[in-house]
Length: 358
Ligand code: G3I
Image (cartoon, rainbow, N blue to C red):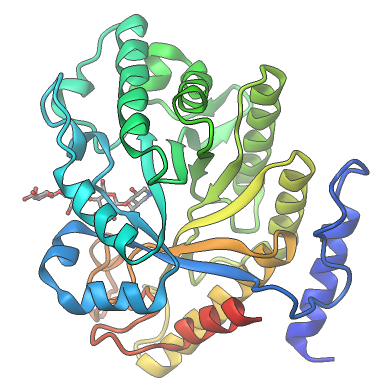
């Protein structure tokens, strides 16, 4: 049995065994994954500047993607630079393109501590914060009802390194409203667009270690809290900004996916890219190592929840946040995405295409 098939068999067993008895059994993989349905659906986040200026960027998205996420144009700072006004122009342009091309659309992000306009950073009371948060979600979801089918409702609310006494990140939303800001956001979104898939999105779920386990555990507890209050939550977005030097917790991801499924919650991969700053300089070696790391992660994620959406955070190495944020000591350009800087497919794209067809 090949290494890949062996790994999938082991992981599929974990997915089945770790499910609570009440978990749905019909879609669980039993043994080696059959090539019945695609293991993943693929999409990419589109950045306004590149989208508007580079026809090859638009063409690559059309060619390779089933799903599109505007990278920044649905954030508060883009939609509401001035208090009391909404500016939908940039978002509308990308959304019209996606609709015309028949692509599914994910929205990012209705409630985040970052990318907030100056006026919103000055919110002073819980009442004011709740009023602005509810109005924001109601206005945006009303506009894009039937256009955006899935939303990152809350992004990155869990502390970077959570503790039992401090599970939540110190943000303006948590300071003014406590963790109840999560309840408010999901409850408002569910009322504003009952048909939308409502997702909690965060990072550092993917690796081995107590910090990553804690983040997965806090997420499951948060879901149970919302469900006990009859507040809808449909999915958890694993951002998957993968570090090549960090071991993927294959069993942990499969178990997390199975635990989510047992709660009736989907798993999504929402911002996949590969941080290669610790990989060798040689491009061929680097691209193969990056593809193998992504394959290990996607095998685990798609074993627990076959057919899950996988969105890369951009599509070409020509445009990515990774190189500036995680600079290589040899000053070489980062290679985090499925297409290289000349839009040529890399081994990472081969992995994605194989899983789309599998
Ligand atoms: O659009 C303005 C432009 O008009 C202005 O001239 C320029 C210079 O100030 O700024 C432009 O806005 C920038 C925007 O990207 C679009 O380029 C913002 O300053 C800049 O902060 C913003 O960075 C984005 C960042 O989120 C913060 O919103 C990155 O592109 C984006 O890749 C990054 O994505 C985040 C996810 O949303 C959440 N998960 C982590 C991920 C990586 O940080």
